[in-house]
Image 1: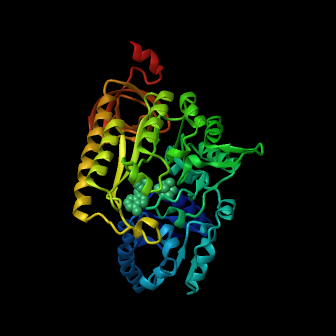
Image 2: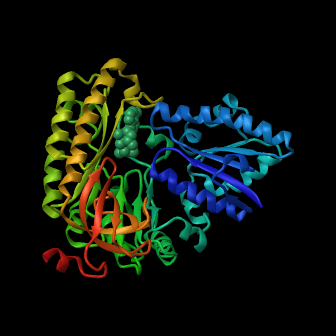
Length: 458
Ligand code: 5AD
Ligand code: SF4
């Protein structure tokens, strides 16, 4: 059987897309392999969000050139495809710079992969970078049950693609195109198939997921909250999450969903990017620092224990020391449970890349270090605050040591559970006993079948 090696860079959208590309090439007779050396087909699913991410693909292509040569000496052909956002942004330029590449396919064209691969194998190099998401979602094959099971207990489902926000630093509106919501019935069908295959946690994903406004089965336009409520009603679902949200699209019905739907996990990734109003305006974020603070207050009023996470950019063009201090202050006030922070990276074609006052690299380095030290301390503080609490853990796999199980708390903390007898996909009540840098330790509470509330009260 022919084999395909698919490597994902960047965000969860790419992880999901890689799964769907695996489904497409499976229909063409390719089994997935985790080893590039074995692969007759290599797909790099690339990321263009920062320069570093985009450059990774070229160093990987350098390695693949050697691999392709060695395999050719053994009489074996290798087809190399570049997919994802670098494919969309750079198109044919990739083949010019790296002639080892046989085909280039953007995120809107994955349903046409079989044609591209066939052409490539007939020595016709193709580039397909159309925005054709409607057709793509309509024609991508459904994953089969065995492959769903291999994915574990948690799966992503893309509900919308693209973004209309045009933050001035961001390539996404150009590489992923205009915002497009999938019809709710297609999403619900896909989610039900995953649940039937043993998945217990569904994460609804999109570049601007809470802007979701898809056609509902009742002919009306559904919000993300309506979609979440419908997913919560599917049989077999234990947990629902969604990411990534924009502060401007946190609607009242979504806040209500956090208050009312037990399956919707108390975790929200809500990037703020910066803490100074002038910078937020130059970023075209469409909200002030205080508007973000007030929004967080309302979210916490709806769901007091919610864990919040954010993305930050340091060194946006023109950012002053005082403006950076505003970011530190905002982050400290909110106390994020998790965060991602980056040095600003000018992206070709985005408005911010043309601003003259770029911040010098050493200044960015120093700011990033300070911010990350503070965010890490906040993350540890959040983790320590769960010690002693009784929490539900969704079991994912066996733990590091015999007798241990590995899973996640509602707050997306990785946890090593001792003393539980459970299968992946089951939810057990645990008492958190301690923290390690990247996980928690916990003991199953009494008999793991006992209701958590009763044991917690004991
Ligand atoms: N430079 C640095 N970070 C960026 N991000 C997006 N574009 C850039 C850029 N040009 C970050 C933002 C976004 C996350 C996915 O990546 O913080 O939320
Ligand atoms: Fe990029 Fe802003 Fe859209 Fe997020 S909301 S994908 S940062 S343009």
